[in-house]
View 1 (spheres, one colour):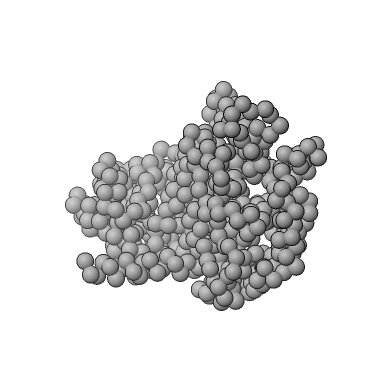
View 2 (spheres, rainbow, N blue to C red):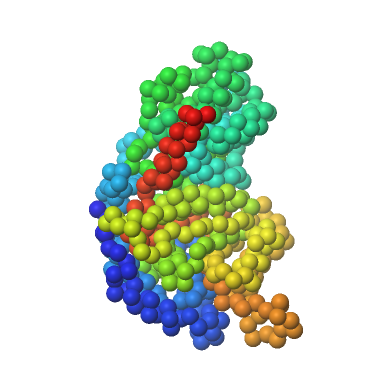
Length: 498
């Protein structure tokens, strides 16, 4: 089980409060002047990823105190509890083992079996041996899900679109009928395969959309054709069978995998079809490598731990309300959407693991967009606004298509924005007050050699583990979602009265 320690009662928390009063007037610009090696000293590398956290309002003392806080809150023990499969999601009596989905060195038998089934099925679509009911090859795949059954796979499929094959993959999530109709408008039922993703096969949005699509399909095809055009990712085999899907066309899920961390499982079948099994396996391998780093690296060089603890520093001591995430690649357009669910659904809690209402801030509001689009939209607020908004910049050193001119300009902008947030007009003579930029605005820089399935797996897992660390420090249960369930219940009540 997880430790149940109120962080505000620890010695480290109290020392951090005192330390914060010392840090309020200190500027990051001055820290760089004092230490010419700061950008080297406050940097950690793992394989092809590097984290530069030097542009933060932190000193060695800050980092030491944050590490002490992690130790006092039992972080190391909590990490082991998760990886060992203890039921750390206590309110739902579940283990939290999405890491087991990608532990390719030591796969659970049921995970290995499902991966093999995903390989065989995706290969049959890609190679054209799985035919529609009229004998035509499948050209389009439609994923029907919502939340974790949509955001993760959709994000990865778009993120890795450079590696896509000829199959066109679409995502239907919103219960809005116009969303369904727009997607179906240009699809041919003879050459389209639908993947219904719902653990219980009762999720209102997913089953409503699936039922509408089934009716659309049967307008031009016999009921016997359903088995050629519909598969399911679910545990409710009886409901799936009633829908008309053959049992051998069902990909299983497990209750030890939370929905918002399930893209590594059969929930990622659409991604597997889009990029092929070998690339999907590389995605898993990258995440697994980050798992090992997170589990084994000392906290002082541990990327997820460093990012999480610095975030706690801003959230709980500087009262920063939001964090911005800015990937400098158009491929990661959906990455922030994915993080919003992963982070805000996980740590948006106000009751601690002792059953008490917390008396400190939990959760971070995450937002952002791709660079350089964000520079022409909201970055003005970061530069000259009144709010403190810690920012993560994410960039790739190499472009996929090799357009060096474009890529140099893209990367130059990424570096420049971090420098501008740091320095502002510090030390410069400014001729008008509205041209003053105070600087001293914190940011992290995550640099990655190249966008590959493996590197994307590492990046996603990095943020997953950041979420876990913050939940441990805040003494909350990160893996339940009772607030989501309340909304569903009330929507059903409303529906009955309409």
